[in-house]
Amino acid sequence: MRSISSSPCINASANPTPRDKARQIERQILDSGKTASPEASKPTLFSKLLEGAQIPTTPTISNDFKRMKEDLEATMTRQLYADRAPPHHLHIYAHKHNTVITLTRPNGDPLVSLSCGNLGFRKSHRSGFDPAYQLSSHIFGQIQEKGLLPSIRQLELIFRGFGPGRDAFTKVLLGNEGKHVRSLVSRVTDSTIIKFGGVRSRKARRLG
Image (cartoon, rainbow, N blue to C red; front, side, top):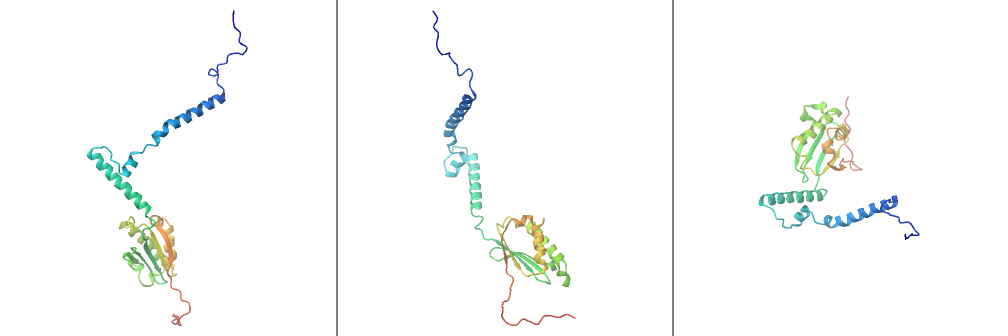
């Protein structure tokens, strides 16, 4: 005699629904995360090296790891204290007759100092926009040729005077010639002397 069940036997694994598939995928993701977490929490070789742990290696490999550790520490320290380094100074003295540009160390020692006269301009030809433009471009070229860029962490621009060389230097700095120096500028100041009151000025020069 056959036994007849009131409810039909349903095999859920044979025909899973989309909801069951989604739950199964979620369980797989959670299980994989649980199994991978102990491995991910293990310290890496670089972290052990920076902490000073002893790593069993051969003498050649240990020297390589030691050199790598020193390079990493030097790079991290340099990036950490880069903003605290004293800036170099680039003085732009632009008056109506000439333009003088001087690059100095943080302590004030000059590294490069040139004027329009050093480029071959004489007397009244030293004034003007074009000589100052050529001087600014030449200064940036000298800074790169002498290898001074790696030693400059920050650069402070100090303007003095309202001659045509002021605008000429700005044009060169914002152009293609100053792309390597432009990223080093951290501060721009103006040290032009402006008199307020004081003694009587000299008589203005009259020509003709």
